[in-house]
Every structure is written in structure tokens, then in C-alpha cells.
Amino acid sequence: MISNNNIEKINELENPQIEISFDDVQEINETQTKGNEKNNQKNNKEYQQQKQRLKEKDYIELLKLIDTAKNYEYPSEEIKQQELKEKEKRVKEIVDEIVKMIEEYKN
Image (cartoon, rainbow, N blue to C red):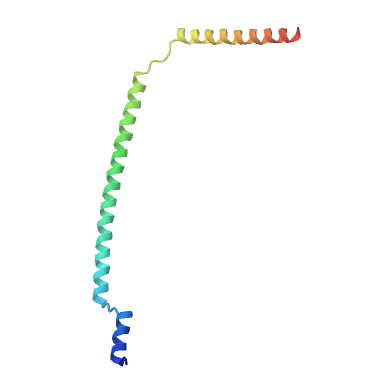
């Protein structure tokens, strides 16, 4: 027959009672807090580095744009007139094609 003492031992093995002291809980919380602070510092450092890289990249792009603007040569009046003549010629060709199509359609 199983004694009461053995039954208690079996119950303890099946349902162990874990005792955690207040000091243990505080230690766990402090450890988690330190870990969180360390992660926050690491993440903040990475964020600041990324932010700095983006600033540097934007600054370089801005310098490139300024350089391009300084070296840009606006087309002369002669070039503008030549481009306008080419566009007028192309419009005339398109109108002639449309007129030709209309005449063919009528016939």
C-alpha cells in the first residue's frame, strides 16, 4: 500500500512548487532593463549613423546638382530657331499625310 508520505512525494514530482523570491524577481527585472538599455543604445547609435550617411549622401547630390546648374549652357537663339523650324517642318509633314489620307478616302 502507498503511504501518505509517498503520495506527497509523487505529487511534488508531478506538480513541483517553484518558489521565486522578491529579490529574484528584482534581479530578473534589472537584467532585462540592462539588456533593453543596451539594445536601445545600439539601435540609437545605428540610427544616428544611418541618419548621418543620408545627410552626407543628400549633400553630395546637392553639390552635383549645383555643379550641373553652373555648367549648364542655355541654348542660343539660333539653336532655338533651328529647333522651331524642325518642329514646324514635322507638323507640315503630318498635316500633308492627313490631307493625303482624306483625299484617298474620298476616292
